[in-house]
Image (cartoon, rainbow, N blue to C red):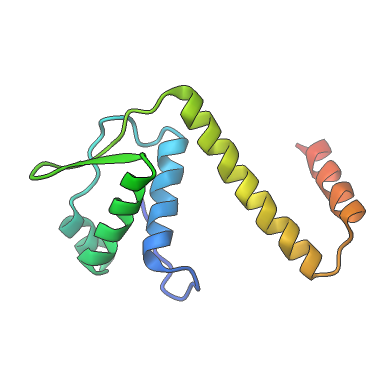
Length: 124
């Protein structure tokens, strides 16, 4: 598992960790039943608090993405393809919502936002 923490980011470290693990699960880089690094091991590797890693793992468990077996570790949860697709769709919607909010704060009109999106879609 590859994780990069940006200590100068305004995003809390546990959220950075959650997002990167979530993304790796959604992209299939982490497979169902695959073990995640131990809380202490990952904390030492990233040079962050074990409590921060535990908080990220707990939140991912609340989302149903991982399962913790006490005394054994934390594993990627089994997910059906429908749920995984819906989770990916929600992640995209969240990102687009953030982009639209930023565009509106910058004074860009709804029509201009649509034009930009259409232009991007044509390029893909």
